[in-house]
Length: 194
Image 1 (cartoon, one colour):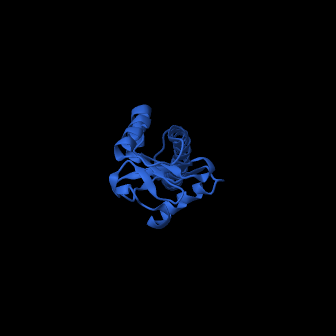
Image 2 (cartoon, rainbow, N blue to C red):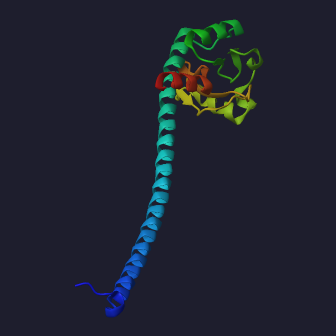
Image 3 (tube, rainbow, N blue to C red):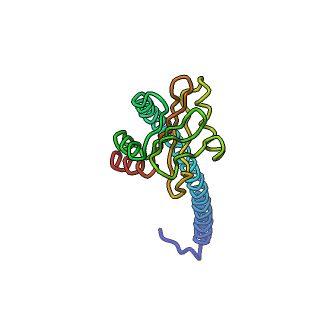
């Protein structure tokens, strides 16, 4: 049997319950949306943190690999030269081309560049030129054989970022410093990885 809501009063209670349930549902939806926003923000932050970690780890691994490659190249150049000896810029440029590097310096036991890829570098004294170049003098102690620096701005051309690695000649009789440009590495990486 059908009855009017006015007669029984059940309709008002039904509307009240639906209104209350709608309010509770709205509250839960807002709470869920707020929770989702916080979770999303935390996930985005965690994603950024993980990507930062991955990028740092990748940079360190690339640095290690470039060190290994430049060490092999440096040893080959040192073996080819046999000892620290004066060389012309043309000879050094050809050597750099042959070994596919951007810069090679031959430094004698006293720290003076006696062979360079760039004319302006000839005669630079590693011991007095800067603290950065002086670090390579550890290779003349007869004990340390390899010294490497992270990619940094070249002192002779500050527009160029280059990685430097030095290899000692036997008995600390000078060193070979090899430089490799970051832009070449980036280009090679893009071609290889995509």
